[in-house]
Image 1 (cartoon, rainbow, N blue to C red):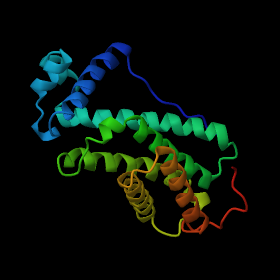
Image 2: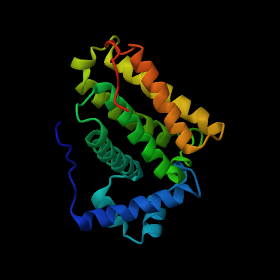
Image 3: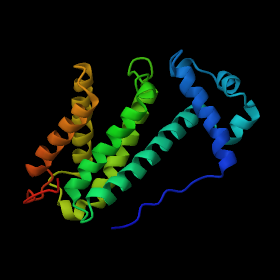
Length: 208
């Protein structure tokens, strides 16, 4: 199995950027993203505007940096899951691990994600969807030769992302316990994949 590697920045740069990111996240608890200004972000972070613009072009780039951080966390978690339960690199089990890594991130950062309302923060909602879409698309594209996709890469990625997202959102609306949501989402994904929707024959038996 190929090793997963994640590049890191200088610690001083990380600390400065983290201050801006935490300030934006904090402000999102008070007002919509579009109403937040760079001046407010600098005030909360106690870092100058000059320093802010040395790292980010605007608040949109800062928001994107937050999502990029989350994608890196999800990738690390995905690599961990692959090492722990998918030594044979089964592509379908890999899809399950991918889903679990995304759900773990969502649960761990729930206060932040709960503020990303489609009506109040449409930019953040759209950005999050695009990052998740690209994360899933990258995995499916990497495994497409073994999965033998029945539909186009874009169609398959859209189906998985939109379907699972809608399912999870419905579970939250019904106030299902977190562990139950994860188990049900993985069960649903496994059923879909074993049905041959990707175009690959159902596996004889997947690892537990």
